Length: 215
Image 1 (spheres, rainbow, N blue to C red):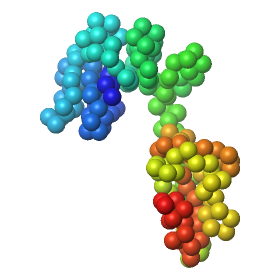
Image 2: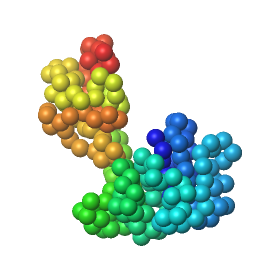
Image 3: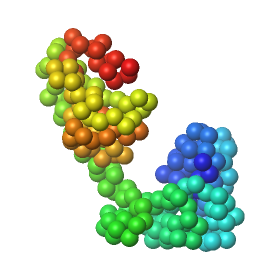
């Protein structure tokens, strides 16, 4: 994928390095050229100095061929404007903005923009981790009989229904984490690629459970 990242702060630089290491073509835009030092000498993408909401700058970064754009500067309004430009002028199929204010995120999501509130995401991560640890603590007395499973959905599990892998007396999924949001699944929920599921199974039936989950 050809991906533009606007903002080379801590989040932008980490995202750029991660995507570049995975083999994507990454272009990072920042108004401060010194910010690119965060990328390190091993970064093999491109950098463009300028404002991420300036059309000339965006075009010099190759926005016309971009498959995705992430606006992650420290300015909520800049990120929102950049995504509006990407979607409405250049028709970038996957454009997202990071904002700090959850109220702005809710407002602009209703308008059809893909806005992610980092404040809300981090709060959910803390909540979910508290929940996971609470579950682990409650299961601790039963470790000789019940085993806790946490795994990423991939391969043959993608597209399956929860009821397809729940087995009475063997294994049951009780939590699903989709893009950082934890839910209590229903039997007809569909497992998506890279979901994280948590379930419990009987210790004495470990081999059957492994065949069920990993084939």
